[in-house]
Length: 194
Image (cartoon, rainbow, N blue to C red; front, top):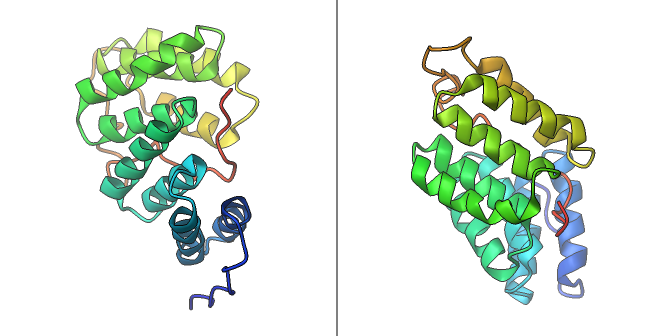
């Protein structure tokens, strides 16, 4: 049963965001969404609230809303690199490969010393059926990603599902029917340097 949200009229967007993050950790997605919608209501340009609302929508299987909120978050704050990466994943797992690649172009500025650049490059190799290079880039990304363990787990899951060489990948088909094997709700707000 959902908890009744406390009176939030005196809380600012950052406080509401943190309450949402705590609710999400306890898998109280209804409360988290309520806190995030309230944060956006009082501060429509609060990019991190849009990002986290997108993660919550993805967590409950509302992928169209997740994509819409992720896109809103990067519109408000283009430095939310994790959101750019997630937009690409949402497109990819929906079969929109070109849209995924386009979403990931903004990560090129990070360079090959950044895990998100390495992850997106690995995923681009995956869609080209270049599995050796895919593994190489994903492995490098995991090795240097010390910020987001959930994302490392997602990328490891991708590698675990890769075929040996020439078979078509089963990754998109083996996602429990949702088509979104990659998305995890992250219990941290994205930072510009991520």
